[in-house]
Picture 1 (cartoon, rainbow, N blue to C red):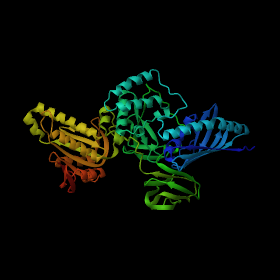
Picture 2: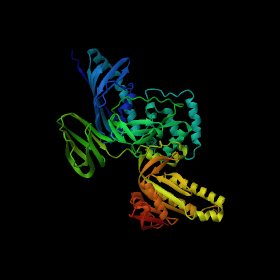
Picture 3: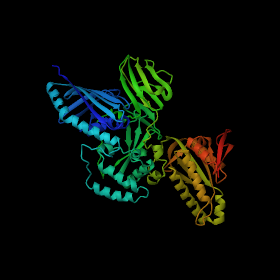
Picture 4: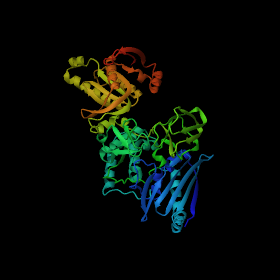
Length: 604
């Protein structure tokens, strides 16, 4: 006995643009939570290499189980999915959401659903549910998204009431007072406590400090440091999340000591070398003594889970798909599920407006594609199997507080000195700026003013250096006698920090003796290790920076060509010609063989 198909199309006129609505509307995990659907769990029949996964939940005592195709989408215009049910009132559900830009800058949002009911009774039940409950819930959430996208509200109304553990609100009040005592964070504490008090579990299960900072339009480092302070006080816990280089989903660890240099993604079925520059992110969640946050999944294939993927299409064997894309300029990769390799894509104004690419049984074409930001892109699947095509940005999200950034912050080192890697682990941190300094004529200083006075001057000079380094987002890694090793994420930070410290030490106040500081600065790839029970750095970049310091005459800083080539440093040099002199040096460096290096000296 065949049942009639049900088709619903709901439409809304919204004030926000498709681009600003997309992160909210395409987050189907959150959408399902807000409309009141239960959390999902995988079935035992999920295979290790299936692209279609099986999921289930219970709703009002009815067990519902389905196989889900991968979501298909084109950012920021449409997304959809097909589910085939083995249990429950439906046999199939197809969803298609479209966001059409309007001339006034708003969006016409269309939500379509095609449902195959299992029986006439199920059909009647679904029809009543859709007519009297579902549309109302969907409308409430969609209009909330519109307000949130236009920044008219900071919070989304959750279907469940926020619950604190016994004594949690009292502890939160005490910790709030402690955070207010921290200088420089007073204006952020109230907003941050609001997030802990009012946000739902889904939001608090993975607090990203840079996302909060961007929402509040405040410096990112300030919010990150506030989260670190809140963790030290017991308001938050942090979690180091390992990110798969393909799907960018990952597993969370409570400490760096639990992280190994090799990792595995079960969803993508790949092993990969971990690095701190991209593949480890620090996020936060409330301490269970304040709020017990329940972490559940409400939709696994949400497009917003992989925001770097701008288009994902499931193309049958021997078929093609025409896509109208609007892309940001930059580098992309076109790949397919369970197919090795991919095809690189460059998007620029000089690229083609109309282009075709073909995936065959022997793989991807070797040539790189050149696309215009507005392009008609034809994807052809000439293989004998259905393939999931993925077009992804190669640039990683800049809202992730990566491990490489966090461990190079002085605040992190000060608050969590015991947070280190296992002694046998070495993990890449990408490119860092390494600074070495040393006091000039320190032996003579001890002879002239005596051991006690000289020791006091050396300790004071460490304080001056540490403060200047921290102001530029760097961290003092270690002291070696009266020498210092520090790291920065950006070369310009290292230059500004050392020049400020040199100026303060050479012109001291309170009748202190002037000190002359030698310095060397290099930029390049480094490895994080644990040495003497603290996080340290290792590699040829570190070795070269140490050698450059020996070439310094005092009151100057010797930099490598890698530092000078940095765009920010070039701009600084151009604007500082009247204050600083730049001269070239040609030198051999101990331990680097007969090679001669082109170096530069910056001096007043």
